[in-house]
Amino acid sequence: MVVGVGSKNIAGSFLEVIEKQGWQGLWAGNAINMLRIIPTQAIELGTFECVKRAMTTAQEKWNQEECPRLQIGRFSLKFSLSCISPIAVGGAAAGIVSTLVCHPLEVLKDRLTISPDVYPSLSIAISKIYKDGGIGAFYAGISPTLIGMLPYSTCFYFMYETLKTSYCQSKNKKSLNRPEMLLLGAFAARSSLALFPQLESIFERNIDLESS
Image 1 (tube, one colour):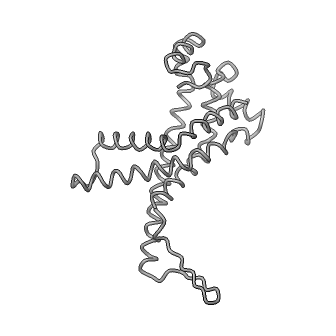
Image 2 (spheres, one colour):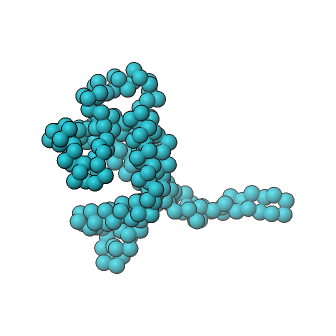
Image 3 (cartoon, one colour):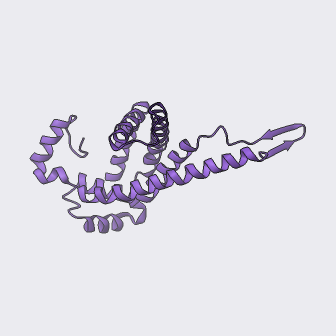
């Protein structure tokens, strides 16, 4: 669904964009969106793998050695990382870090898409946004974005890694081929959104904040 148009269905939005902006309106903000996707995915995947491996190493180390204890009188509290999923922690960290780093690109994309008359080009959008609100304007709507990204990213990576491991074990495979990666990734993404239907409202609220 294209943001910034009044229709509530895909076909209606498609026709409305063409009527108001012409065929080129269907690609409004596409350049900045392509520039946003590359660093966002790179940072997200890199953070996920780094945190997952660090957590796994820490768990193995703590399992080999005696876990830290907190002694309070007769009571002894044992700290353990075994109950924490490295995949879930890595997924949460990936979503937070990529959002914090790349949110300004998301703001630029939405401004270029929603208000092409006010922001006709990337350079004008950067200049106008900075002039109107400084650096902070590039982080408009960051709070609802983080609130929505945290559960989604955690659930997505946890489901994807779990599905991948289970599938490879059932098929006696070491890795997935590309079609299998695509299908499992799509299923994990759709399932994550289905588990958190309120995320759509959060993202819509985020767009309202950015465009205000």
